[in-house]
Amino acid sequence: MSCKNVPIPAAAEAAGMTNLVFCEDFDNERSIDFSGEGRPGYSFYADRPYGGTTLTPEECQLRDSVLYFKPEECAAAIGLVTYSKKGRTGFTMHYGYAEARIRADLPASADYNGWPAFWGMEKADMMGEPWERCGELDILEMVDPKEKGRHGEVGKDVIYTGTLHEHWRTGEKRENGRPVTVFASSSVIASGYQDNFDYIDADWHTYAALWEPGYIAWYMDNKLMHAARFNATDIPEYYYRDDPKPVKRLGEVYPNLVERTWPGAHNVMETAEEILCLGCHKNWPMEVDWVRVWQK
Image (cartoon, rainbow, N blue to C red; front, side):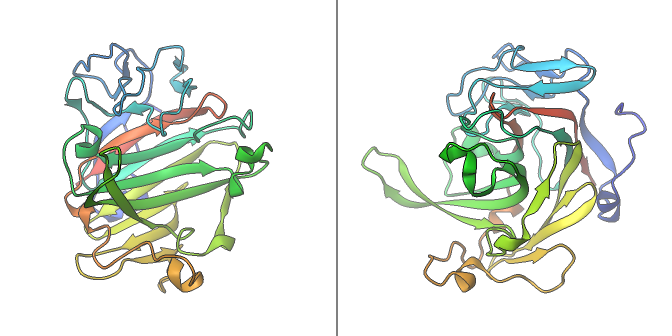
């Protein structure tokens, strides 16, 4: 579908996010900058932060307005990014409705070190700038249940997850000089509802997240999957589908585990500037039809 006359998703329209500020259909040479220099005017950049190798056209093939994405290395799900570290140019997101139409087959091999993902990470972290707290918004991660593939058996089922992380640096240093980081992790799954996995098939699906002040909701095919509410003083609350009652936190379900949240967790998203990413691995490739972001 062309970026012209694109219908506004119902959840975005209800939130007043009717302006299409980012739209990539992977149908021309301006879709991806493979130069490694970060030239302005592109939607995605192949120069990866954190020291990852620059992707090649062979790993990111564009055919019939579809991205066939098969990188040799996952690089922690950092594949194509909407902002270039080298060129300091591109798109970043603060609040909005981000969506992508994606499909992926089951892992081709048990030997994969990353899974299909569509997500956002704090610009300061990706650019190597100092920070104390930063936010990560995982809009889609396709996960092999119980990581069966990592134990030598290719998984036969794939689940969809959407997660919100906060990374917090304690001020301590490791032996190698790197800062000690702890993180809060929120999703319905991470909150203990392990029986509420949402299994997905290899068909095309639209994955999205609505990001508003104090609230993030995840959608698949325009259907609300789960949500998180947070503020500067309270412990965040997480919700399954449209149930108005928050689910139990991880520590309530598994008392022996250390609680992985705290009062004020995720409120860092109120000032976050997210770079959007597409990531996967050659043994678990994915196809992307389009990526869009709507804002007020």
